[in-house]
Length: 228
Image (cartoon, rainbow, N blue to C red; front, side, top):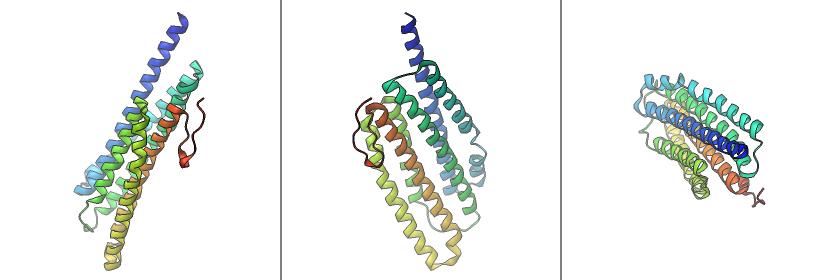
């Protein structure tokens, strides 16, 4: 009976951990959305709110790590449960970095707003929507242990990379034609790179899901590994 109660309590704590990861992912994603929204609207006040709004993400980062280490110490899980907690530690770090990238986007957006607009912003909001969607799907895959959804996240990364390259080429043309656009155009290029990095963090989460569920390391297209 004690063993059954222990297993039940462990599973409850694991579900709480997943819920906190989802909460952290939602906060980080919202920071990205607000930063890009502020950029497109030229809303300096909105952008500045992003710059001062990272405390909840940082607090969750610390809390989730503590939850993971407590679960490892108290229950010494095996196999898929062990992989779930190890993956949660890594995902937690990825989400905290997404929050940092939202700050980076906001800083570049704030600089951009002091210049006349270089061009109508179409591809950057599109990149943001893709990156946010990848992050949501990767976290859903983690909670549902859905490797098919995780694989779809990995497949979406190419579209994000292509948009970043397209933005760079277009802005380079503007900079060559008018030196006055160089400084703001460079900030837009930086923002596109930050968004691409958010997509990279989403793919990291997706890779962790595949490892958690099937014990396969798909980083760098690694071959299948035997299950633990």
